[in-house]
Image 1: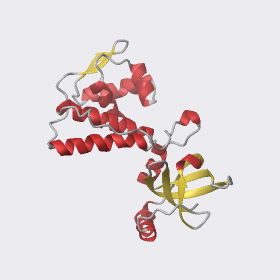
Image 2: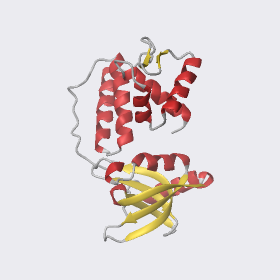
Image 3: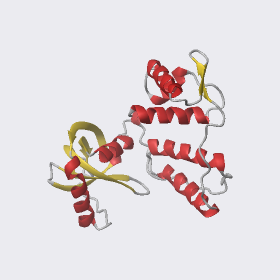
Length: 229
């Protein structure tokens, strides 16, 4: 996570808090050291963000520092609620947390729509503590056009190691697929995230080829997303 993204997340945590939040709790949520939190708090205060508090007591965001009103009509708000709730089916933990933050922001300025319910059944959660590959890492690889080293087990139980150029994530109801150019097969392939044993970001990027590869993949698949790995 970049420093700017981390500071944005820090503001969102403080916005949602009803009591002062200790530096160690902030550090645990953002997976950084307390020293980093102190530096980020000082930087936010230097930018006149109304963060109040001190070490040992905790920090809060002064009331009134909020989002401007969102100009959505009733059906647009309901569409947002349903769409955000359906992210529970993706098994993408980081996206689910982001959806919860967006939902809180919407509820801050619009009436709640708790009567709109979506069944949470879908792809299993990508919990790293249970040995799952984080979908956030896969999205980062696609976003930054960064190569992945993947250990994968196919439907027959055969394990292989691949170097991929990740191009897209496809969220189905019961699973998620990573679309990529596979250097081992010299072609486009789709990989189920629940069959990934490990996925490591490599330093190599493919920024110049990313747009063309994605265009060729879309032309080849024609929205069918045929699974083959």
